[in-house]
Structures are given as C-alpha cells and as structure tokens.
Image (tube, rainbow, N blue to C red; front, top):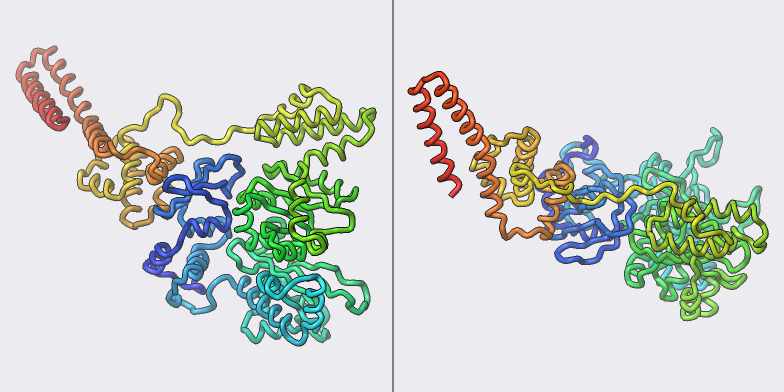
Length: 589
C-alpha cells in the first residue's frame, strides 16, 4: 500500500468483509441465479456458454470451475475494476456504509481521484441545467419529450458555454487540475497568451453521465445545443470524454446501471444508438435498454451484455443502410458468443421518435418481430443474383471463418443450413470449411480417469475446507509425517492461512484440481457425512507408510542375520517386528 493512501487496519478490513454482500457486488457485473446454497452465472473472466461461475454468500467467495478464478469480494472488485487492494476496500466500505478510520500516514483524499473529479463535474452539470444558464437546455429536453423525473434518474445536465466554468468549480472544490485533465474534463491551452490557460472540454452541451457497473461516473457524453451560433468549423454533434485509467470506451455501455434490473426481469437487452433513445424508452417503460458510445457495437461491449443475457436485440433503421449495418454486426455478435437479433424501424424513425409517436405497445410489437441477424448478413452478402458465382464462393468462405467461432453445435448447424440454402452451396462443403480448426474443449474440473487423491492430498483438501480439521491435524502432528514434499508444503501453507483467517487466499493458492474439490465441499456439493471416517482413514494411511517401511527393513534384517547364522540378531529383529505389528494392529482398530 502506498504511503499517500495510508494503511487500512486488519480489523477495518474484517468489518468491511463481514458487512459486504458478495452476491450484490458480483451482480453488478454478472447475472446470477440461485442454485442450491450458492448462485451461478456466466464467468466474467473467460468466455463460456454454460454457467460455471459460482458465488457463495454464506462463505463469502466466488469460484469459476471453467477457468479457476477464485477470490473474495475484494478480489472480485480488484479483478473487474483494475483497482489496487486499498481502493477496493474503500469502495466496498463506502457502498455498504462502513466508516474507515483515517489512514495513519498522509491523510489525503480517499477513493479514486478521477472518479471524484467526474462526480464533482456531474453535480455541477446537473445544477447548471436547473439554474439560469440551463434555460435553453431545459427547453430542448422538453421538446424531445423528456420529463423531469427521467432527466433526474439519468443524471442529465448542462455544460455552460463559457470557457472555464467547470475549471473554476473544480478548483473551488479542491479537485486537482491534473486529475481533471486526466479524466478529460478540462484541457490545457497550447497558447501562452490564451485567455483560459485551462478551459472546459464540454461547452454549451447537454451532458449525459456514463457510469461503471457500480454506478460511479467515469465519463460523459455531450450533445451540442441546436442553434448554436456558427464560428469557424462546426463542433461535433456528440462529444465523449477521452479514454482514461477508469474509462475504456469500447468496453463501456451507456445506461447499463439503469438497465440491469430490466434486463434481468425481461431476459433480454435492447441496444439503441443514442443517449436520448435510451432515456425516451425508459420513460415509456422499456427499461432494458443500453447504447454504445457513438460507435458501432464492439465485441467487448457485447461480452459485457452477455454476462446478463444471451438475448440481445439491436435496433436499426429500416432502410438499406440499416440492413447493411445489421449485416456488418453479425460477425461481431458471433465473436462475442451471441446469435443476435435485429429490429428494423420504419424509415425516418429512431426509437425516440417512434415510441413518442406510437407508444410502448407499438414498440413492443415491432421488437416481437425482431429478425435473426444471420438473415440480414446472408441476404446482404449473397446479393440478389444467384448466378454471381464468385461472390457466393467468397461469402461461403467468409461463413466458414465465422463458423470456426461458433461453439454451440445447434447454432453451428442452423448457420450451415441457412447459408447453404441462401448461397446455393452444399452443406457438406460449408461444414468442412467451418470445421478445419477445432476449438479447444473447455476445461472440465474432474480428476483424470482412474486417479484418486492420495491420503496426504485428501487431508489437505479436508483442512482447506474446514478450519477445525486443520486444528486437529496440528494436534495430531501428522503433517511432519507426510512423505510427499509438495503436500507437506501445501499443508503447512494451509495451516498458516487458517491462522491468518484468509480463506480466499488459502484456496487460491491450491493446485487447480484440489481447489475445485475444496470449493465443491464449501458449496455443499460433496457429501460430508463420512468426513470423520475419511479423516481417520487418511491419518492411519499416512502413519502406516513409515511403519510399512520399518517393517520391510526389519524383515530384510532378519533375512540377512539368518543367512549368516546370527541367531541373536535375528531374534532381536523378530521381537521388534512383532512389537511394530502389534502397535500397527492397535492403531488400525
């Protein structure tokens, strides 16, 4: 931990861990459903079709049986938000109302400075919209049919047209200029005689805050006010914050925080083009809607959506350009592991104008007619001329490249059949084209056939899944008798981690197969009724190894003594062997 942030005490960390709900935190990123004592969803750390990502609220950990990722609530936030441990602890503490003591060293501001700068800017923009300078912006939003309630819900604001209004506001709030520059809120003039050495990036624009999975503002999109006086080159209609350490444009979707509950409830996600499209649909009661940030949908954005649902429907214009856009999007959907459907609106309409003019029921009706994107793709690529052999052959090769990325066998079969029919080629040829490179099979968390864990490995498994077992094995002093160095070291590490109370790091440090078995025990998937017998059997087996070795040595000593005629030595060795066998028999009872 660095000295500016200061150290967080172990007691404070314990309080945050006990107060936090790991299921709630994970649900910001993954759509979870209950399964027995735990919850499951699609892993955010690798691409998969079948959920193998488990979250145990009772035990306070997450674990993926597909890729092996494991950790506690702090580890999840660190991995998904790219935060250091102290920042993750502070963020979770703030979320669950735990007051952390002031750091020992320093005493500067807490939390992410860029997020703080964006939060201050968002507050400023909302206040400006409500104030005197926001009269035109309020009138524009009313013209677009947006009411005060939905404007407040989405945090819409206004950036005044003066050159440094935000600069002065942030300075008054003691937000360092370097943080505001890094966040892309303000810019530095290159002219030494500039009136504003630092000036606002967003000027005379309606402002739409862009948030992360936890609802923190990480960037902005600004729509220029209509009727703005022209001077020089016209400004871009929409302007987004530049990328920063907390904002990656191609990985972020507008309004996912607001849409998350709607996506879970309806089982689908709708993708529209603009910010106002999202807000207008939400106002009409269609709340499972998100938007990319001024560009075409990316694979990473679709992968984010796929964590919540596999039913993703994109809205397009109903004209020829809209059909071509739908066709271009299909390979991107496939690469993200989605099939994808498209809604084609009447000419001249976007979701905003359509729902305002015709209402929610009409919009829902047109969504119900959504077409598979593969249809638009094949129709666009094949063209109307069935005699265009060269074009169809090239399209068949392109379909083959797409087929290589389709892992679901049913979807593979559907695409082959559709493409063969539309392109006039043989199914066998397409199957061969798409099967030249086989995707590796997903990892299955099972032991190799015929292999069972050794007694030492089983004892480590039982120790890691139950702290009381670790204490008993320490009393038995059994670990010193382990034969295999790797299991002795692992057992000693488990004991140390049990003393420290850090179960997450303990499990994470285990070998992969053992880690999966431990997690299954913790999740209650393995029968623990015979644990006492297994524990006793494993201890007996571990202790039997040196006895068997000693017995073998005594037998060899007897044979050697008898061969040289040394009856006294042979008799002594027999007495010692008999005593050993007697002790072994008693220990096995």
